[in-house]
Length: 298
Image (cartoon, rainbow, N blue to C red; front, top):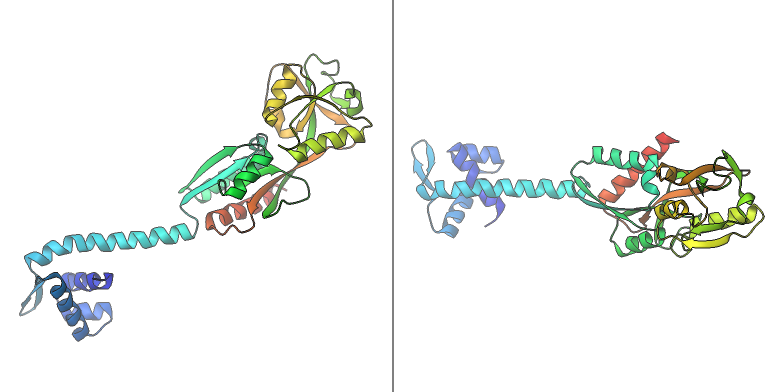
């Protein structure tokens, strides 16, 4: 039994006339009659009783019509669902993000815009450092990831620009320079720096080390932090000082002070990473929204 047999059956049942049903279906009357007879033979029951004005359903035909309508409706819904999934309008999108990315206004605007455009796609969020997120991306555990990267793209990864952020100095509130609006980075040469391990976030680590060297000193390595958000808490606990993306300043923790670095601008790039071989429409849609949001925010 094929879906077309059910469609033919329902057309005849609704029209109560084989000729009109054939016209509606766009086929000849003899082939339609043959298909109905073949269906009846397959089922082993008569579905229609012939009358002088056409046909009417038998008791077996009425029983079959109930489930036949449901089957056709299920088939229509299955087609619509497949087409929606093919357009990326349903399903699940897995997004990875570094601890600081969530604070960037472009990121929140992007996710908000995507949810408005594709409300039937479920979003799952995974936080991690850049190394963890790139591993998740490679393993297919996330579809896209907001990461801190330099100018080089890891193998198999496509990078999409999101924002260039200035870096801010974060000091313990008790630090002698904690009330200054701008601080020369060289003034922190004798302070230990709270850093993420380079293997966890090589770009952030290198930006901080490079800025210190540019200022004429080699930073003293202090306590390591597992996540960027932990840096602020460790600074508040007076483990040392650090540099963080400006968006992290939204983390208001007692015992810390944020200030600008005097001199050359220190910046870091926020990017959206996806697999080069990604083919899912939901991922493509997210990247399209990202391009639109970044352009409008420029």
